[in-house]
Image 1 (cartoon, rainbow, N blue to C red):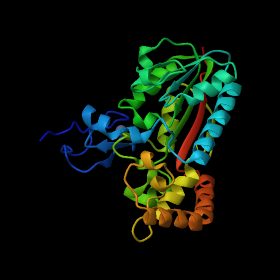
Image 2: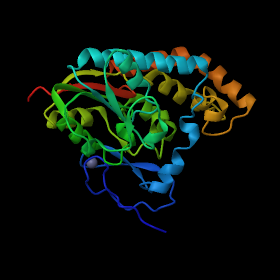
Image 3: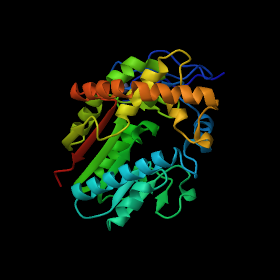
Length: 304
Ligand SMILES: [Zn+2]
């Protein structure tokens, strides 16, 4: 039995108590910075096991409509990054299957992706490396639902800020543990995603850090980062008897994190359809209150 170092993944402050290996995953909030850290801290082997092929299978994650929606939203993000950034290459941290980089290339913009096991991704340049391993001069650096997966997110963010070209932009989307949906769903919150999400950074904490890094925050949005309406809906469906899992229900059978029977799946989908309007209203409310489920930020390096 081993004890994990109990240290805040965001600011490095000591966390109360040591988490015992084998204990159920949970989040411990840091008294110093108020970011959350997943405990016990997963070992490399545990993390490897937490990313089964089902997490992002080659055949696609969702039904054909869902995968098309995903690719459409990557196209929108590519257009936005291309419009925001000065001329130059784009670095996509946590580039997944490379869809953002492909969409950028279609707009005439070169890029590089960072991803675990990068060699399996063909078509666009990918490396299995950290931001600090790279030279500077990036017109944009994108952390699209990536920061929360990194073991040293604050250091990666600082390295990224240093490696932006003058006028370059950081584009970040990250779950917001200070959101209403996080509060409402507790341990069932879709974006908690333990143990893959190692750090849980509230909106104000992220914005504070970007200011400390000397970046100028030009836009903060509760809806541009995506997943807000669905996160809310998933949480509402989970509260029903039998705790139906809508996220697994909309994934292809091979992409489900847990096997799901036909009846269970139909129940989850029916509940989702029924509760969708309510989820829409609730998500709009949390966005209006600046407590959305996802934080989206654009921050620029204004000084040379
Ligand atoms: Zn902390």
